[in-house]
Length: 585
Image 1 (cartoon, rainbow, N blue to C red):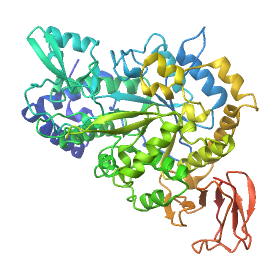
Image 2 (image 1 turned 90 degrees about the vertical axis):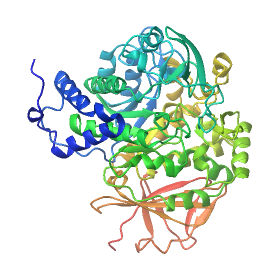
Image 3 (image 1 turned 120 degrees about the horizontal axis):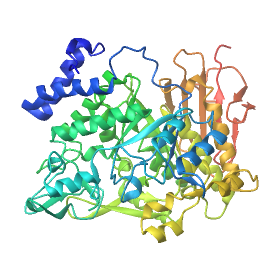
Image 4 (image 1 turned 180 degrees about the vertical axis):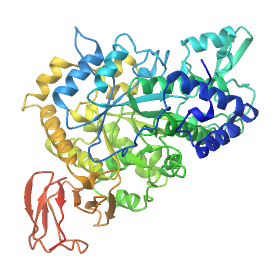
């Protein structure tokens, strides 16, 4: 077989070649040219990127993501992925169009995020054919677990045995070196003693002794993951979630967080996707303060999407304390998004609600109060080690439905929960809904007892027969939540003003309300979204920015026409409106 030459790879422009070479030079120095040749050979082997295809718009208002484990719903006869496919096709077609399948590979700990083999589907979950079947009806989002892999993986076993190239795949450090500056979200030891063929080594373990950090200074490791990326593309993946990406590059004497080399690697993966699959999307998972988080947009040359990590805890704080001012102030200062960049808006995921994104927005007193409120609702707190030797809350582990609960009035809690979900659905970006929020799952205390892991509280596995019975019984809160939620998602998909690229304007209407306007790219539709942040009935006078002379407005959320009377617009506790605005009159 002839090696592909520069001239045979049609889509690779001179600018793309220059960018790739520049990235490789920054990261790997003199190895760059050899690595570029190796990259061409890899493209040729997979047969991708060899023809120019028309590029469609990456996203629109019809995009909504369901975050789920492969085995979130189960039965006793079929593999997990086929059961999930059955559930989603039965209940969610038209409500969500993308499934984020949390790690479905063979794993040894951390519910999938300690990967044993990146190229296999765990037997209990099914096969790659099952994954592809789901991909016929939904876009697929896969986890790209880049920072670490399992200590039980073949890679690590080969490292221990001194086998090439894996013997260079893992980060080693001297325990006598000063590592006090290293920032990490765990209180466990940073280094783990390991016996290898070459003697005693200390490997870097940011998250746990079973999750050994990968050495991105190794060119062979980069190509291992490029090969995995191409394989995932061939299996139907469209969106790639770069897990724990902020910790990837290690440099003694720094905090090993967001290092320039880490950003360069993300940009490199972006450049590669632009060549081989231009419609694909990179999203970085960096649960850190907002300014650090959005740094992964780069200059429009890095991640296509970042998680809106500040939204979940700030919504909790605002709605539980019945004041929107902090949320409004934060939203008002959100920078204008560069072309080709957007947020993934969510309120809950398989992890807990991050606390670090609140830094610089709430003071320590307010954060401690929020922690106590979550504990009062049955939540568990995970702690992180600071460089000064102290510990601070890192995440709040609780289902978002229970987090929004009212300790005296279940109905009020449900209203508050829906206010939070509707708000997240209306903000600029693509919405992502965690499976357990969709059905109002309660805290899984039994699971926590079994695993001794706080995060299990929000990772219950459902029997599909039991779950179908609950969501089809109108007397259960699961049914009420599910029916309202999926109806709201379906209504959202028909509104061009909710396109991720549509204009967003935040309005300050005082601490009782949160308000924003969305206007479609072609200016054909404008929606005013209004949220009552209190447990009281409220009225809102017609805002001066609302120029329409109309006294009645159509509410997309309820499907009803709503009067703006002389007393103003009436809100029940935690009520919200998505008002269609026509200013032509």
